[in-house]
Length: 504
Image (tube, rainbow, N blue to C red; front, side, top):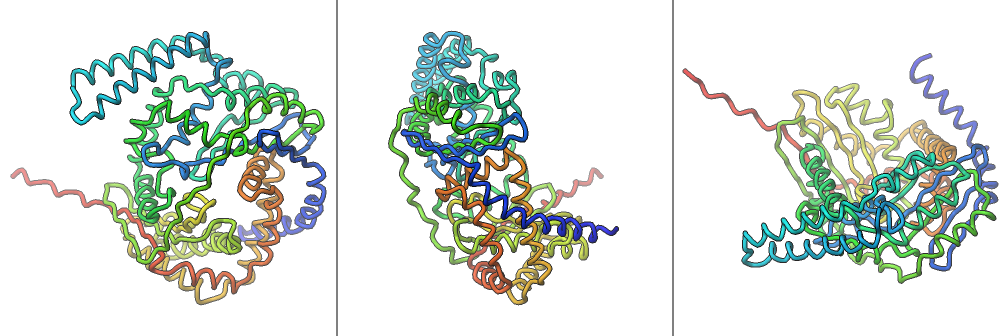
């Protein structure tokens, strides 16, 4: 059987499964319970008893978009700190450690004050830095590495322990045996009830190294420049990891203020999927998470990105392989046209039969890789639809650009085929089927939709929006969006190697 025949067969099997999806959706609500605590924390419980485990995702509605100049990277930094434990976890002597951490912060403030003064005294700066490091060393004596959160969880059978921060939110997740539900409730509530910023400055050094790695990556550098050029005012222009000067300056005191503002219970959503019984789970959630006091939720973001009215072009030169990237401003993902952008992505770059792969990689051999993606760097606010390619050896970015613009013009002037549109719709529904089968993926998706749209059911309603996408919609959106004055181009060109001087 040919590769194309295999693909068609797979799609046919998914198509047969789709009627069952609608039936499953009808019963899904019967197995789902939404419970909101008095402090505002929302829990969604999905009962699935096929294995004695459960998975969860806690979504904090805060990402790098909520940062201001001076504290960029702090949302990501707090994600790191959330694994450090609290007064009951990760410490050998909390009363002594608490005093030691206060001394660390006082010493850091003194050093920073002198360092940033109009006329810093070099000897005093050196002296204060030595004092700060001594206070760090003293505080480290009280850290119990065996009692750090992820070590405890691993001993109790947890898997997939992790967290992520992006431009829109921060997520915490893992899976545990179902008989560890109360342990989960205690540990997760503790890290948001009594966060302790132990080893803050050591961990900040780790994040600085992440930043350096990104700066040393040609694609990472290009993305940074692309992002900052495309957004004039909106915080989407900021890198999630933060600017280096901020990473070298913000404090544990800044982190505490950030936590108090953005980790209010009303700004948190947790989804638990697996072998659970809501009637027995809810009292446990009330007992542990209900301990966290309610406080005012944060104010919404005010800044709106102004319309782009001129093409922007960024060119980098380095010794690595050329990279081409261009993006166009588009609405947030709650816009009715989002399924149309998803259709364009699918048709342009999903798999070896996609238009970009066929044209740039297979037929013309102008690129070794090409693709498109929607929702960069986030999707909560108006964002970017982007397209990229890595030119083949000897091929210029301008040659790749010409073909990309030709494919975009084709999308604007010609209808996509019936087969392309049908494949998109089938694959989009198949993706949901796959997500529903995995507890962790399902928890993640439900948390996002509940937080973003106020109703987890929007995850499934999206299927109806996909079904309504037409060929005319694709031509219309392509014509409205992919225009020169809405375009930002970023390309990296290979720097010519200097000719060696003759020794003769």
